[in-house]
Length: 525
Image (cartoon, rainbow, N blue to C red; front, side, top):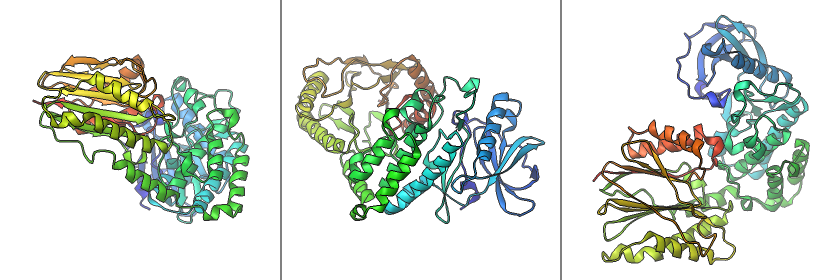
């Protein structure tokens, strides 16, 4: 593995992305000869060094020079070294030394030759047994940490390495917590999120400074699911993809209520080990193949690409759309030169969402068919959404859809927007972004609901942004507006990508971690 691929982790996630050139390349850090810079994190640099006695490679993390006078950052950096020093386990990265050098502080750790578990999940295709054996190694590392009073708080595939020999190494203790600390949080951390949304337990999202060992077990449950299906989950767990016995174990690890979850990782290890010793699982397999088939089926329901309409410049961002089986979006150009854009998401996290998404697409096609061929037919958003709502609600047992409708009429210089259990549409017309919303329930929840519609003028140069982030409120809108303003000079596609990535990175703690669709439309004629 190339040196630059190793340990691209940050110590504090909320400090990532800050500018700043690395210090002049040091020849030595403490007693260690430096070979190369491996990576730059939010508050640290990682170098490849050599042990002066054994000549073996080491990973040398140094605190960024701009933080050496920052009391809280120094405290956090020293805490990371303290926590690593407490542990001594084959599945946890080892501390080789720490101290001061002329430019600040350093931590010397063993250099691990291997790949991250994230790469492993995305690139490898192993049997359920092999995947569970990897899970057990991570679980044993957690057992060691928990026995020493350490809560990792950021267990995720990027922070787990697989060595060339197949062993696991848990790394990055930048936000780990000691349960016996009298001061659990630095002042600047209070009120902020710590962790990675897709792997954070509900209690960690609510209060990351007041968690127990059970929050690490929740993270391990997500990782177990991802290993078995061979895909990143983005917080969407499909238990029906797993054999019944495994589904029960993963479901208990991911119980939203702490009291219903595994309280001790020993119990999780016991259940996984018992499963591996039974012969019934030997006939079970093909989980990844089933998932791939479902993904292919889902992609057939979505447009292969966004249409090239002369009146608009459009961009669509939907990261890892093949892993999100419940999303739907479509584009329709009517015969009278008006346009319909639809965006939806099935609100029940199950593979049944794929079937209902296909059903939704069929309903939409039946309701729009006449407008595609007849110039005299006049599309009206409210009757359309009312009928679609009744059709969905008539299917007993189905869950509702988060749904958005955007109807564009360039000839009338207007657009109409209807949101059903979804967020706002953003209108940019020469001033600050304007958030437009209407209070409608999710589609299919109430068969007799009378829907509200927002209609506004829309002229050349104006831009519309439709997103599937369901959150509202002044804080969310201010954060999203800032992200949008930073991307105004980009093309529509680049802007959609920037908004999607920026939202997940900067306000990820307040939104669902699953991939979200962002559509940007600028009127050019």
